[in-house]
Image (cartoon, rainbow, N blue to C red; front, side, top):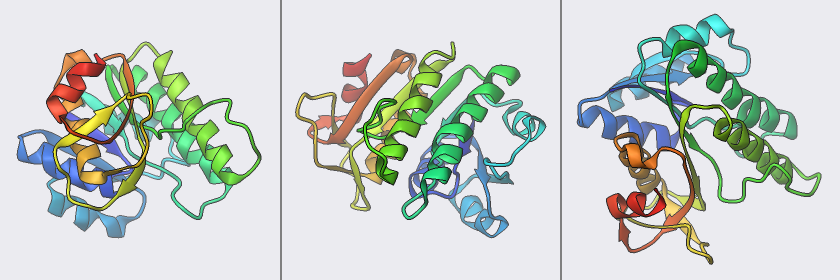
Length: 215
């Protein structure tokens, strides 16, 4: 497969790039800063400099043309204000949805957030973030694309275990970025994850079985 990753220099994205490259996929990674290109190359991806907040339709279309799937792993990041939550976590995700539809890329995997909710209450920045993610998820779910929306709980840099929990009623806690990347990679290779939206945390279920349980 040829897979485009938005937010290609993020921690999850770089781990995912290595996983996909190691299994023989071609990865095209969108980064905002040219200085990040070397890290993407080292991980096995092909860096493309694209500022998702200010990209044109033509720029996005050129990146996605020839791809089989796209992963949205971008985010405004800690410390950013409400405006960037809107412009990255929502608007950039939607721009990529529209580009996927224009270029015929059917498969779209969204890395969302456990509490994402288009109707989240509050005026604080975190509430704006949750609404932005929730609205982006809603746009993807109604886009007609072959989507998967993955909503991890709090993220850590601990080594992955290859075991997670999905959609349990009391799902809380944390999950390693390595395991999130592994879940995304697994979902990309399986048609039975199409149309699934699920929360995930660290757990005791092997990732292939966890993906099967949400289909």
